[in-house]
Length: 444
Image (cartoon, rainbow, N blue to C red; front, side, top):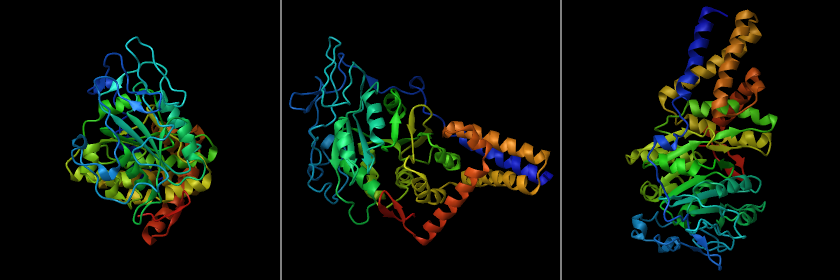
């Protein structure tokens, strides 16, 4: 390798650690203000014999209302606006299903009551959040992923106010799985004209919620027991989001390596939002227009962050580390290719200049090392290969759980990244639709 090659390689490789370390894991509770509170030994509401939620003493439970009946006086939080009906008549918005999630009360004696109908009820006393967090999970054909998420919510040290799974036209029994595990299920109608599926499902869930905060979670995520308390403790207005730690299981999933690193290297901790785990107050969510304002966006999380910043509200992003995890594409190579195709180029187009240039320099250094290994084999080229592999391994350990051989054989996932990014760019520029979850999505 020439001196110019070595200089280019070293400068490019320096970009990833510098940019990646800007996105920190979520701080521990001791380093942020605490939003936890325990009152009279009670934790959340309890399930009555009729299967309805009731509130612990001293904390009235607001009655859910149909979206069209909400007013600006409801919790002083306002209303998202007049939009098409939230459902198709199969379930009443705002009304829990027979298997609705309920928070259990722990009486002052220290014992707890648990409903056999709800797997989300805890079996022991836990702290209560001052914030009433409504968890909203948009789900389309997620029967295989939901159990891990809902079981993790059942093990939280502090519980959410409610857990809402919005069934977005699933055909695999998603709604039945969610009900069996104690979630409140809302069956959304087909997205109205101009809406994409995920923004519509998130909107339906937000309209149904009765809490003060909204925590949007993708169905393929799961949380550590202390995650909710730490999320709320770290939230200081605006929108707080976490890019989950990507857990891979099958060999083909290793091909997501470069996508994950690039996604975080190109992110700004004060200008990016990650849709898989996003926390905000209901009032501020409505203030920016909610998902109705990004109804047709493929990268709705990025657009939401822009709306919050435009309103002068803080935007904070973190890495998931051990706190929030997900498994992105468990259903095969085709799902992985289509999933990254629909959003990777669109996401790149919203990246700030400095992270964008750093990302390009880093990818160029990786390409250079792979190219020189073929055209100019030798000791220096071998050293460059080891250096690139070691640095990629360092980066991958911070974004997910990947195998060591993914970094050692870096040209393979790099080639997949370049091919899919090219496909995504063409689809974005030509408005060519991509099939995702049995729907046609046009990257934009």
